[in-house]
Length: 94
Figure 1 (tube, rainbow, N blue to C red):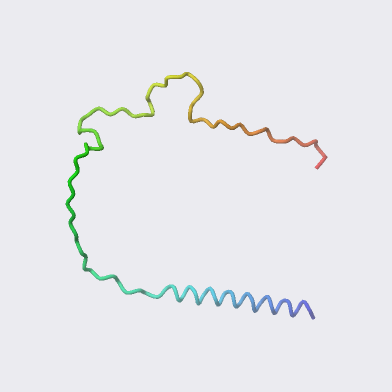
Figure 2: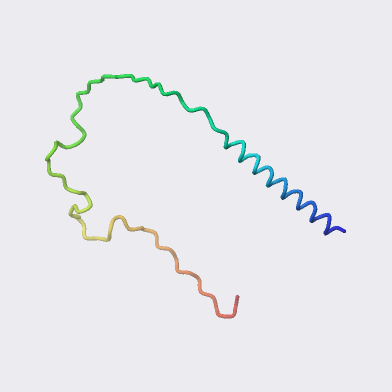
């Protein structure tokens, strides 16, 4: 008797969940009104006295990846933390 009641409760809960998902999907699928086609344009003029941030056109530019290194040590971008080795288990002792 309890297994029948449990199955009925599970079936009702599943049906309710599916119905809720269908209702939520249908409510979110409603078409919305398209935005208006008018746009506003504003123009702001500012003057600066700072030098340009980019180099002048035609100026030679070197990539920083190939810059010579001063020290001959390990790669400065390599990780500094070394993880301990994985523990080993004795076969058959698990």
